[in-house]
Length: 401
Image (cartoon, rainbow, N blue to C red):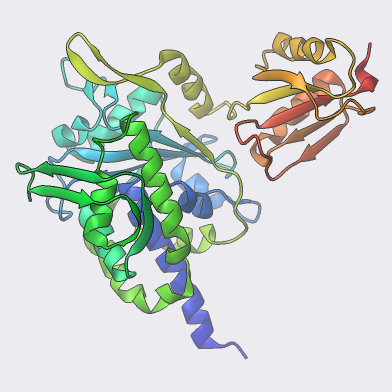
């Protein structure tokens, strides 16, 4: 006999997990929670992603927060944290891109380039969506917008969040509405909702400005994840659902969200490609902001385009001790338009038969390398120490020409 109470709690936990995730992803960079929700092994049924995407295209969802106290006051405000979630319509290659709020971009209808967070103030969610579409050369299918009050109320509802504050955070803005006064001491502590928002909004003390703030916010979400997903959350489901309805604004239908909440919770955590739009903080022609690295943007646009895979970071390692053998095989890959990130030595020189190790999202590229070099042994790896490397090619004695 089915235990209806347990079944109800399970369904409720799935729904509230998704509610919490939407609140967090709408306001701040995700890190671990999106990894929990979006990066799955989508083998059972991937039709839900086709709902969002163009035919044979990508699922692209813009996720951003606004500095407002309610949905009604969200219009004409600047967006704060901005992220683009992208994934193949098949459910493969999930990627999350953090876009610094001070990124200088062309905003449709504006004469000169401006900070990307101005777009929402000029033309609401649609103009921000259009700006991001133009920046990356893609179609954004859906958006999720959340205000700060959602985060404050959610943190209070779950009893606060423990976080190791990296520095004394002090900042005042009497002209903000309402006036902003941040005063959080350095060290490990439990933050209530108000101070949690202050922690996430603080940006003046980081040596690398917006990038440091993004890292701190990701650490915050890592701390929040376990608490948000614990069984103790279940009695708080009704209140958290109310927070969602009051403070989350999205063009994703309620029925589709319920399907997503059930679907995304299935399976184990898999690989999510986390990226930050690369650039430099500087002043150009009197305009200070975060200027995108054009070469990095070009690579990113290629990754996001409908017909291209996420580009893997590849290393070729000498596993047999034969001089220059790794370089020779790396050159073969480069000659086939496959960029090699690094060439070096394997942990030993005892490898007789060459092999390839790859992270799950890069199986097709590993197979392509296998065909080019004639390596039959390819192995999927969940993780390894060098997180920045996606494919390792270990050259053995069998490839000695």
